[in-house]
Length: 43
Image (cartoon, rainbow, N blue to C red; front, side, top):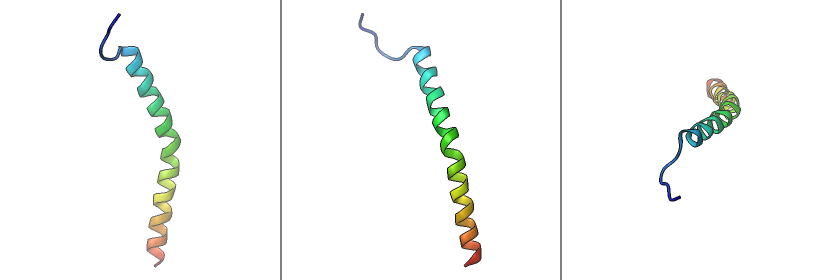
């Protein structure tokens, strides 16, 4: 069977994985932005 493209299930799995990774990375990113703003405000 030679199929091209992705099925809906495959796309949903990728979206879920990306969402999990984003939810893990977002708090670290916002903390770094806050630290950068604080450092800039003190200089």
